[in-house]
Image (cartoon, rainbow, N blue to C red; front, side):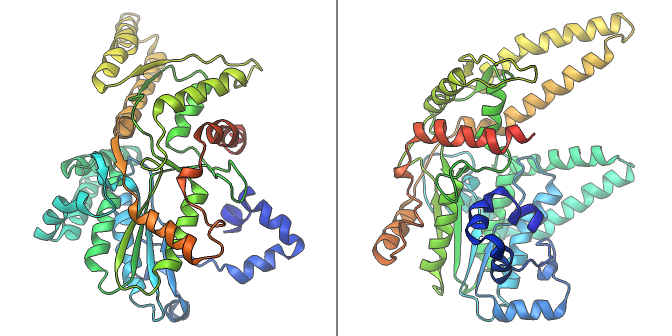
Length: 436
């Protein structure tokens, strides 16, 4: 906990405030318990500790999850789907429980367009399917069969990983979801709703989470997020073309606003024997499209270019934009795949003299195409996330709580140009890119 969370730069403001008393302050507030949501009782082995938790816990916040779009199906299923069920089972044993708050994702909606409501309508068809059979048993059995089959073939760990990743995408697409991540998150929500009984349950569905807007300081981010990989590749001159609809709205929200929404939702919904869903995003109240994002990023790196390993500034161009997968594939075919076929022929003619070069380029091209296929649903996304429930929550906060400004999560206050150019990109460079 100290190495991965408390010791991070994110806590520097708090550390400065408390000085020598910082560790004792944290010790009074936070207790780390070893466990694992993929097990019953959350993997908490010590009986007395489990007993104390069930006696004392009042609120459970479940944010455990794997967010890789193409995670191994066995792993994604055990964490994002069955992990939710294990958390719920544990919650029902907690005598003083006031609520269970589950962090999901707005993209459980799948590939939809138009106004996407804060409800479960996007999963109605799948829920009907699930109620026809024991979904949990079926998917578990399919995973076990696939793993046993691979073991019987003496498959390497690399082959097992690749096969299970492909299997996850296959199962997701069968039910109408674009990738393993959103599919298993959607199933987690369905299981939660079906089994919650009288528990007070809140589901927070953030959109694409970006660097901090204000708290504890602007621009903090940990690791590359959806849009950040694109920004990093672009500024280093490695990304010269992109599959994206320039006029599509890209829904993103700073991470501190997501945290604020979670905190406020806990206070507002405790002890209410019902469930509610909140979309936490910006596409309805303060939309920004890819064209504007591209313009801000281009202006930033034109004025302040990335310095490469040789100490030279990298000049960025406008790049090529492709609005459909078909035109992108055609470009890749002409620009990269045909020359690769030529290299394959030359390599064969020269007795595999260029084998390493061919294998390297072939692997890179396959990786690029797989990433593009994974990101396609979001780069061409046509949906707008309704947030009337979240707006009601903001209204209640303003009317009922003195500290409403401290827990602001209103996207209307964000000036996107200022945020992207003076907060997000500098934060991404400082906290992620320069540390690699």
